[in-house]
Length: 80
Image (cartoon, rainbow, N blue to C red):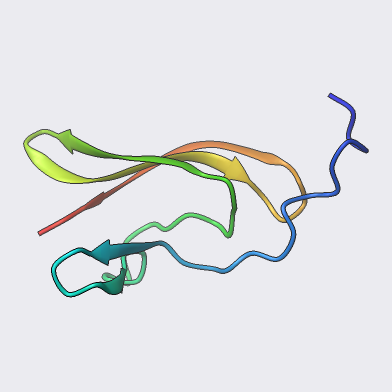
């Protein structure tokens, strides 16, 4: 892949959010617990709803860093 083909994802916001469809308010997922490992700033992340070990939540994979590098990691946020 030509590194000059794209200059990067541009300016990104730090944080992972989910929309509460009942209240129509955004909830920040990645700062709920200080001890929780959270993803680095990224854009263009693949995500889907998922159930893991009976827990429902958001599953995120990869994305692009501000430097235009690619991530290949997984994060799961459980919903109550």
